[in-house]
Length: 443
Image (cartoon, rainbow, N blue to C red; front, side):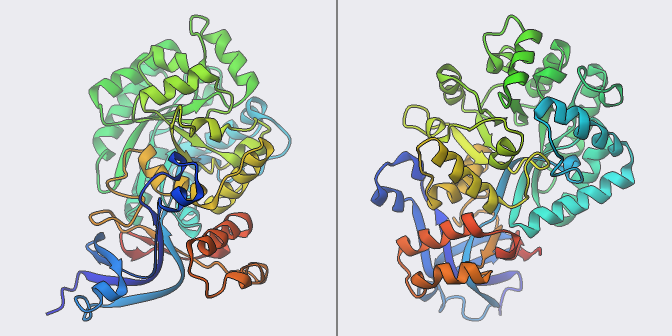
């Protein structure tokens, strides 16, 4: 009798078994990639129980329902840093970070005291992630606890793996977005107990950035981390030069921006720091030693004129910091991680470096999972992992089809690299044929 909880997916699969940044030779980079031109993925109750070539598994699973996909099947994309309250004001004109926050972001975030509005945006936001092939995300909310509740409720309904938390802000913002630290501490404890570890949901202690936190608030953030050691820390670091200057004035005893967080014991192997555009050698070394992760946000860094992130330094043999890709909507200009990868390539080019397709897709999949210490659950097609994946159409537009005509019928890794590079330079949501969450078609 066929087990009704079993299903199979057949097609061309690409994932990673190692970090391609850890090698410098092309052949070694190729060894980090696993490509099954005709593979079979066996799923039971949302998890992967077998993954191999179709010829090796087909006899054993001949009786179970099989979905066959054309295109390339990859693990679902992981967005390491994105603001759901900024969805509506994406593409706001004319400012750099601090003025942009005052003019656009803070007034928009004030709307999230309205639960109905928050739910409307949360639902749209999560569907937009899925439409772009993103199945896991680290998300900022607002100071309003209800904005956290509705995001988690909507993510739970979609069975997505989501990390989020109430934003901590107690100074240097409009009065309507400030929260008394002790009150925020109590609200966070309630939210943690309600949501952390429920289904596929996890909680992040989320100081917005050092500028909007007092010493008292950062001490309470550290207290939460001490009380719940498996929580994440999620915040911003060294995004903009004026932000860095302001932070130095607010925390004169700190030797640099990273040290502000270090002094409050907020830098560790479950800490995620967005941007890190202007880190020096010392900060890179300390990040590496701590095990903290960087959320690299290419479209945002370009849109706000923040600067060029030194990916080649962060992933150099000297440091090997954990790095993932963040869309950073709404400073980021697209939910598409394909577009994020494409802009990351251009930023590398401006620094005399090259970002290969395999390295870029690693950052958006297994690299992001490692950055979150979730590589035992997501990021590749290993047995026992959650069956989040995306089906990519390399010929989604006439231009892409023309570009890829030369590699049609070529199943070498070099041809796959070319097709993936075409996706990250020309692709968008049209390239997403299907998105699966825990083995079920989401969009």
